[in-house]
Length: 336
Image 1 (cartoon, rainbow, N blue to C red):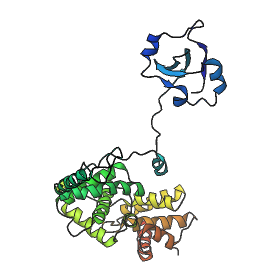
Image 2 (cartoon, rainbow, N blue to C red; image 1 turned 60 degrees about the horizontal axis):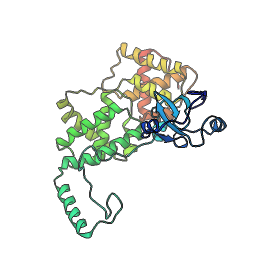
Image 3 (cartoon, rainbow, N blue to C red; image 1 turned 45 degrees about the vertical axis):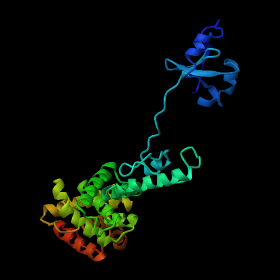
């Protein structure tokens, strides 16, 4: 609140009667507890009473004790967050219970008020907890562990909400189909996220997911292929390779290349496809890396093969082969 009205409700205002005070007694709070008047402390002392009590009347803040009317108070909505750093700074309340699994957790020697539980009741509650856990199915136990991990991976990888929701659906289908037998939860989670990224056409490489989840890349790829064969047909979903143009946008941003370099790299890929280059069976990351390499040299902002290959997670041999393909179909002059 920035300002105070310069007049009272009435110049001849008198102390409100008991009925008026009783009417606002439920909503009355002390001035110092709700508002911060450090900047206008002198004005408050001059225009308000010694014991200010503030209540809301028709959207305005009124002192019940002396009748001073303060400016309109607008309710502030929660802080909006757009980046991962802003999301981390927001106040987060821990959920009361998990979205799935046991709703009651019986453990410890103290109750909710901090009072020590009688040993006789401790034994009883311990047995009730064992019975409750025994009634939980393996499906619920699995999701009870996996769902919080999906939220953790979403924060670390910066994934959109829709990608994580679809990944959870795919994971649930896989658990019901008993695909978890012989596979760890982390591997199946990583494969589900990678499938969901492919479905939405988001250019992310599997190495990023593997590094965050800390699992073996080969096992994740095997599980990814298994999900495509076993789960996606039941969901009537088909996965196609991400367009190389999407990878050019991502790699160009990571390499801090000018926009004209990225645009010419996209034109090279489109021109090569129109001139007959068959991209089926070729890794789109390799084509994107080759287009960026050629375009950066044409615009005198060269990047080394090592830097581009390392960023795009392809070998330098693959990069050179794809460069020859683009030079052949786009008639680009050869260079070292």
